[in-house]
Every structure is written in structure tokens, then in C-alpha cells.
Amino acid sequence: MSVVIPTCNRADPLREAIDSVFGQHGAGKLFDLEVIVVDDASSDHTPDVAVHYGAARYIRLNENRGPSGARNVGIEASTGNYVAFLDDDDLLLPGKLSLQVAALERDPLAGVAYSQYYITQRVGRSILVPDARRAPSGWVLRAMLTEEWHFIMLNVLVRRDAFANAGNFDDSARYAEDRDILFRLAFHFPFVFVPGPVAVYRPAVGGLGGIDGAKRAVALKPVLEKVLAMLPETEESARIKDIVWAQFGIELAPYTARNGDLEEAYAAIVRGLHLLPTWTENRLARRAIASFSRALGVKSRQPIEMLGRLCEEIVTSAHDGEGRGMVRAVLAEVWREGAIGIGMSPRRSLGRCWDD
Image (cartoon, rainbow, N blue to C red):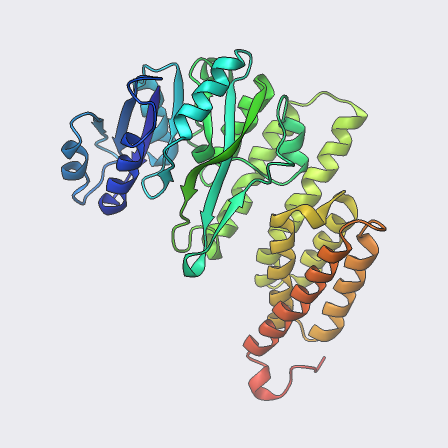
């Protein structure tokens, strides 16, 4: 059982990450534990931290290769039957490895086990994802492409032999490398969902928003093109592709709007609302709609009219009797974020917020 920890210039959180691995229940009894720290050419005191853990294997790269390159070095150096991944600022909960190793031992055909994890938010709050009632098992590629995303490298355990079929991380897929390799693993192998929290994801400041969020959205496009090209030419595949690009358009819309193209962003949102079968259950879609609403408030010359039109589309796109409470919550979020955007608009101070 191998755990690969890529790191670069984050020596202080690295201590907690390594401690969380050595604190795993069952290590040395239920499974042998191999910890591999791959230092991606750090210039801080990362070497001092890593060598403090004599039981960890420390590999230092002379040139920065990025997260994918560092993880690939760890995979190649690993000797365990299973490989887990931990970023240097995240944490494994004590039962992560024992829970998921047992699941893969019970299901020799599965290539990947995955579980729930906590996402830390502002003011110390955390949310647990995915919803155990909706998390798929088996051949999950269709769910990956058309439903809310449930997977990061932190909450999965991969059978080491699976990399021989799916390949390692793609160095060129920067900002979307996790999805790229997980798509390929899901194409070749069944996944098994194991309920229960196994890790804590602590988003770095600026990691999921702003320019990094835009880069991730843009980087995702070639990754989606690659996996969709692997699907057979069927009517079902065509439907999947429509849903994928509708969802991608929604997620990209806030960044498109912030760059000034409100009509293109609005069209993408509307198309997504009418093509995604259950958008009310998709956390990323709802977050993108809220973010787009704020951008409308900031950028639009007729924000009230535009926000009203958006709300009409939201209402008409919802299925009868399905998710009405969530629809009302989204409508409230649209007006709240839109009002915040109007307050942020530079035109407000000039008294021209409602002008054409």
C-alpha cells in the first residue's frame, strides 16, 4: 500500500499531511504502508521536514515538473498493490486506507475505490461530499460526464496495475490532470463507492476561484474532447456529449461574463438549464449560476431586466414537481448575487446603473 505525496514549497502543512498518513488505522497489521514524498524542487525547508520522517521515502526532483510529473515519479517509485494520493495541504482521516483497501480486496475487478470527503469552507465550516445516496458504483464514466463530479485524487484508492491500462498522469493537462486520469481509469475499470468520510480537502486561497478557476475551466475542454472521443458512435453517446458541453458552458459562463461577453455567457447558461436533466442537484452548476448573476449585476447596463429573464428561464427549465424548493433557493441566490454585483458596479456611483 503506497501513498504518494507531491509537494512544493509548503513545508509547514506538509507535516500535518504526513502525520495523517502515519496515523492510519491498520497500518502494519491489515496492510504494509509505504509513504513516498516527492519534492518538486522546493526552495524552502521542505527537505528538513521530509527527512524528519525516517519511515517515509523522500525523492527530490532537481527541476520543477508540476503536480502531474511529481505524482508520476511517485507512481513509478511505488511498490504497493494500491496507490493513494495526498496533496501536501490536505489530510487523510484515520480510516481512509483500511476502508478502501478492504473494498478493493472484496472486489478484484474494481480498479478504483472512492469515498466521501470533507471540503473546508470559510469560518471553519465543512461540507461532506458526495451524497452517499447518489454516489455511483460500477462503470461510472457516464455518471462522471453527466452528473455532479464526485472525484478528486484525495478520495480515491487506485489498484496499481490499473495504471498499466489507463496510463499515468498527463503532464500537459495542467489544472485538469485529476479529471483526465480519472476519466481514463473509469473507461477501463469499474469503480466501487465506499460510504464514509476518508479525507479533508482544504482549498488553497485562490485555488478554485478567480484566474485559477478560469484556467481550470479552459484546461478542461481538451480533456473533455479526449474522453468523449473514446465513446462509441451511438445515440446515447451523442446525448452524453450534448449534456457534457451544456454543463461545460454553464461552468465557463461566469468567466465569460467577467470578460465582458454577457450575451454569450447568458446563452450558455440558458442552454445548460434546458439540457441538463437535473441541474438543481448539481452543486457546481448552481454555484456557476450564482457567480454569473453577480457578474450580470456588475457588467450589465440593464441588470434588473437581465436577472428577471434569467429567473424566468430557471423556472421554465425545472421539471414539474422536481426540486421546487431548490429552484426557489436558486432564484433567491440569483437576486442576492445580482444585487451584490449591482452594488459593486462602478456605474452605481455615477447614478447610471439603470441606463442603456
